[in-house]
Amino acid sequence: MAYRYFEDVVTFDTTYRTNKYDMPFSPFTGVNHHMQSIQYACALLQDETETTFEWLFKTWLDAMGGRPPTSIITDQDVGMKGAIAKAFPNTHHRLCLWHIKKKFDEMLSQVYYKRLKFKKDMKECIRRTYKEEEFERRWMLFMKEWVRKQPMASRIV
Image 1 (cartoon, rainbow, N blue to C red):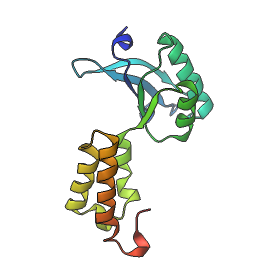
Image 2 (image 1 turned 120 degrees about the vertical axis):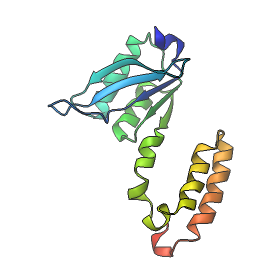
Image 3 (image 1 turned 30 degrees about the vertical axis):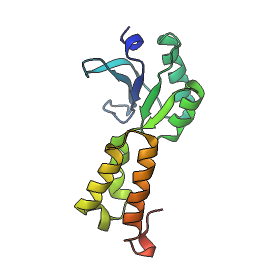
Image 4 (image 1 turned 120 degrees about the horizontal axis):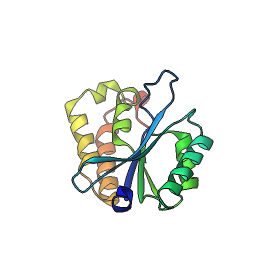
């Protein structure tokens, strides 16, 4: 019943594994009008293939009365991406900021990522923009500022 009222954004995350079979625990979570997390459903999956995700999403959709969410937030799993496109073709698929930021250390040059101004500028771009056009404008300014400072061999592409 809660999903009927709060179906606009759903998060789906399979990174939580604690059982002895190493099966991904997969909760479907939303936020209510009190800004509290609410769990709509969950599953234990045998694997994380596109076929499994597609089955899960279609099964979940049936359980929710055939009403897809407006947006779904997930990690960057390729199988998940394909399954979402098939099961929820009109749903906006967004990537989880926590998962994106978790990869900063490994994907960005350590010389620049360790600088406070770099982090501040990136945070400003990511967190302080609410419209796509504003994000694009700030991102281009950020790239002009930081890419030109890097030596040619270590530039972010």
